[in-house]
Length: 294
Image: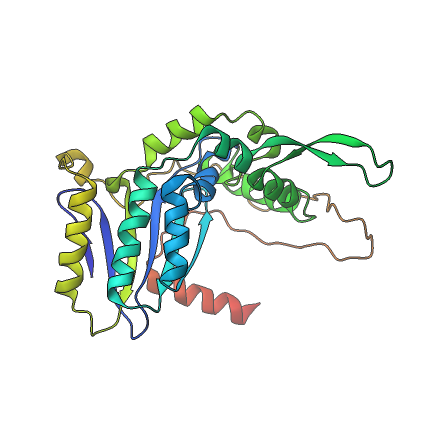
């Protein structure tokens, strides 16, 4: 079932599965550039600042397994615990609080995103300045992947230059150099609101739906004292995207494949303009058809 929390606008998709309680939380963070501002939150919120470190430490004690990812339209955080219902809801409250009310510092932002450090040259043994940072290093590695120019050309051909779905969700290295702590905080303030967030959560049948809703209601009311306005409450769970501006049908592009080994195969990719509107059943059947056809 799908539920909307009337006080905050938070969306809950409730699923009953005979497994440990688990949650896939999402925040609408539509990219407007290649700056990677959304990606920085993934790295900062649940690991930096006193609140982030508290989440990480108590998560280990609560036998939590978690992960996170950033897409062009959403930043997602998943976790589960084998320690039971109380541990799950404690972790949920801590994580939502850290996501909504972070206390990471400017120094932590710079160290995690992009900064300069001193390194030793392996050949000359002399010291040198080196760009680094967890986010920066990750994205330098990503854009150097041989398939990146291919993927970038394909997605631009499908949606058109400047479409939100064509931006690098992780951030282009040169744009990460320009990203400041103030811009990162402004991005967080604009997007991390309960009415712009939701969660797909799975619970075993031993945890009653009514009990789950009551506990989640208490957590959300505690996190946001003021009720959301009526306009915010009517927002959907997916953002509105501009229409795609795909290149002409039948167009063939030859894109450089940045691989040092000339003998390594490249890619051939057939793409269709993203104009279909499929429901979940149609999408499943379409996927099965293409898998068999291919």
